Image 1 (cartoon, one colour):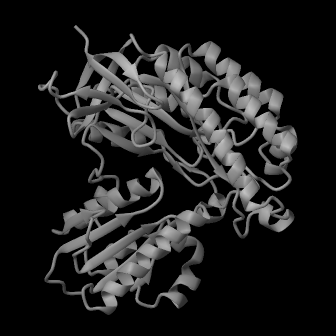
Image 2 (image 1 turned 120 degrees about the vertical axis):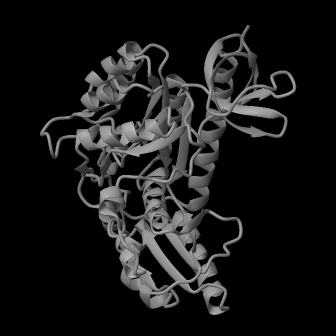
Length: 436
């Protein structure tokens, strides 16, 4: 395929795992002499690629709307080639191909590299782990596995991604060394499910070993863990977090619910009592740890009593970071095939609102407790009158930030660490000044 215009627009929707795939694709385009615009405000190139999300209804709708808007550009002659990849494409490839013929080709979650060859370009297999970072150059997402072997009732991810496949430790370490050489200091460790890591290729839960080895690499300043699963949690990871100063006291662990009937219906393979015990151990073995969790309301069969248990759980545990969403039925899942979606949407929304109001108050208290403390902060960007940074307890994009007045501290640099004294707080963000 002969192309005179060597510009490509790549639009990434969904999670950071998709972002890593896009960054690898961008690098392959660059190796072929192309210029890539990632997430442009106004797509203008003659080639466009949409990396889609297919997790829940809202995400699927966003992906479809983006594809349709670019298909319209193609119909109007403003776009020559349109390609679609990612989770939505993996799950609904045949249906999408029938409904949106303007798309040149649909790729799935794992065969997107074929796109390079289909354009008549050369896929550089020897550069397959290289990425063009779309994040600020001081941090990167590090994907350690694909797929998921869990079978939660509501979740379509295993349908899309297949079985868990761990990357070899040495391959991951090589990628970390490469990224450090490019200036990356902070690594967000991601997977569909971190704690299963290693069982497929090493026949053991190897996450503690992996994190320990990453922490040993010179130049790795912060390591933050995302998307853990509570059942059969690898407890030795807590020793690593406690002993290694560059492993952040932060854990993203999706708990979903606390009422035993709901946990059983969700097929979470854990009880309320076991959940409380795990949280107690996390806090006991890693003093000061900040826990991020995700909770769900409105799963089929959730009673008002179950929901009250969930509220009591949040009050009692006081998660430092929490997100929540209402159940939505996903075709092909266990829930869709075995349960009636029996809770009205207005009840789901009311429960969600009540849960998030509760968390807002807890978040405000957690942030207020930091006033007067001096914390290590990395600066991400400049915005208006402030330098915007984060502590070890804050992951990019989803967690609170630290705002520092530029007029008082004009010489701070993006990507650098500073000791910042917290002087005030609101419900989510902190305000600080350089410590003397």
